[in-house]
Amino acid sequence: MKILVVEDDRVAGAVLVAALRALGHEPLLATDGREGWNQFMSAPTRVVISDWMMPGLDGLELCRRIREQGGDYTYFIMLSSMASSGENLDQAIRAGVDDFLAKPAKTGELKARLHVAERILSYATQVRQLQEIIPMCGYCKKMRDDKNYWSQVEEYLGKQTGTSISHGVCPDCYDRVLVPQMIGMGLKAPPYPEAKRVVPQSA
Image (cartoon, rainbow, N blue to C red; front, side, top):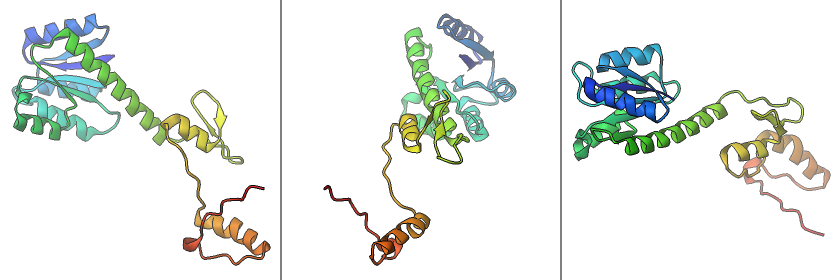
């Protein structure tokens, strides 16, 4: 995974880059906040690890700018000892920081934070995919998933989101389908807001 590291301390930056490579990632190093911002704009990464205190453009402002860009979600890890106080923590949360690493970062803690980052980014990608155009049959209304399987809307949404689907009747279908059925049975159809669900009686 490509990770943008923004650290103005060259020694600390080199150590962090080496740790990320040892964990199997592809780190990109920027030596200050402005360089980090420029790198992010030219080649956005899904994870940013940034120092807090930097000249010119600090970690908080870098995070704010990334959040304002929108697009694919970027997991932002703040590298600092400043987040220990409540006021600093509130500032970081308001800026959009996702997680914190104390300096100097330990490899075990870095690995754990990145594991969480990958999981969150995976969820974010799934949500984005659900929000995009989903192929649907114009006749039977089945939906096609990413493995080219066709399934009913209820089954598709259940698999993608893990939710259960409850059924109802919209006003148009009530007037177009249910009202004629009730009239045909000799029943008086109530107005839509007063309609009650009828549970069929077992024989």
